Length: 287
Image 1 (cartoon, one colour):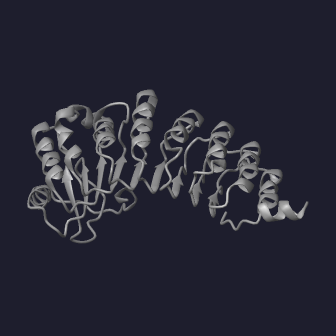
Image 2 (cartoon, one colour; image 1 turned 135 degrees about the vertical axis):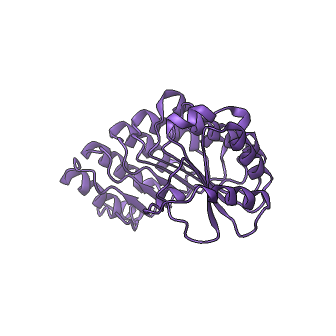
Image 3 (cartoon, one colour; image 1 turned 180 degrees about the vertical axis):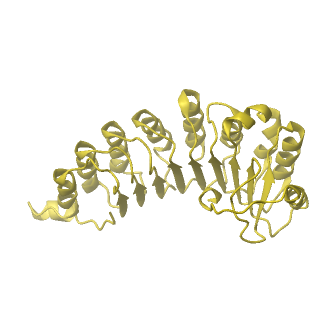
């Protein structure tokens, strides 16, 4: 996603016009678009990527979204919108164009409020336009109560997602429980990334039910740098023998996991108590 390509590099304001024109012309070389507040520190790393600025000009934002709606080559769009500015332009009518796009497969939100503003309106647009989405990512967003509902509602309807990345958003157990309910039954989902949040034992219990779900096809769960302790680790470990598809689970950075917690994974990986237990626990994991 665009939200992970940070480097110091100021973009000239005139380049926004270029981005708008490229979107409007349906430039076949333009596949990745960042919509953000000026200036940005993100590097333009090739002709496939361009940057359009959000200002307090609602009509210009509406024109951009309308053009995105008609574009057939864009694949990845990320909105980076601090809350103060996003409230000014967050009229739902400004984002209706996003509902009409049929080429975008990856959507990202960075530094957005999900309970209102740009983040909320983008979520609602792709709640309705979801058939082609395979990746959804948020980074350093503020979620809140209304944002939790909006996020869960959008994820529920995006049934073709292969990757969900929700990182550095202060996600707690209650939000995890809502997310798990929303994505249960999403058979295309392969990666769930929840690193750098505030997940504890109750969140692990919710994730354990997902791991044990026979319809779950997840291959990777990233839980690095959360607040998971020994009880949470044991809960996840106990769910693993009933899962034959998960190959990678990442828990480093959870400082409260004791030896007992890590040892529970050893039994999940190879339980020698009986032939049947050994067979059921014969997993290979990257941790």
